Image (cartoon, rainbow, N blue to C red; front, side):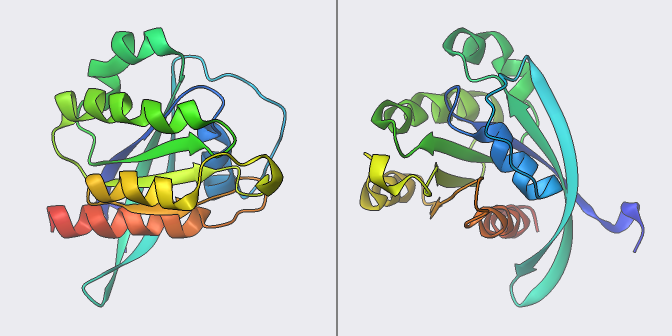
Amino acid sequence: MNEDDLMKVKVCFIGDAGVGKTSLIKRFVLDVFDDRYIATIGTKVTKKIVEVDSGGESVKVMMLIWDIMGQKGFRELLREAYFFGAHGAIAVCDLTNKETLEELRSWIKALTDVAGDVPLVFAGNKADLENESVVKEAELQELAEKYEAEAFMTSAKTGQNVENMFRALGSAMHAKMG
């Protein structure tokens, strides 16, 4: 199969600074984890081809994964260019920080104002820090259900549910775009 046969999609990561967006992308694309925090400046695009299940058939999807800095002011500043043309998004909160879950609503509004109603998947990241967790899985599920989306408890550190989250989004985007 050559690149022209692939379904190409733009995937945006949304969520506050420090929730683990870049770490989740690195775990998915490179299968590595680094716990030093390095803030993303502007945006960074990575690509990976994923095989997803769509109605019982296997489909290859090339994901162009857009990472954005999570600082509040940049949501407004970069929003148009970052979200324009997005086919789907992964909304990430930090399970050890309740505010990051609450902030996802405004991130999603910023996304849908530009890209329209695109498939979403929710990631409650840092699931490996069980003792520090303040966000319950049920709370994440409840928010995801409001957007008719799936939610995953993820850990960029251990790799928990990272692949599953991307595959679920790939399937949802393929179902919507056909």
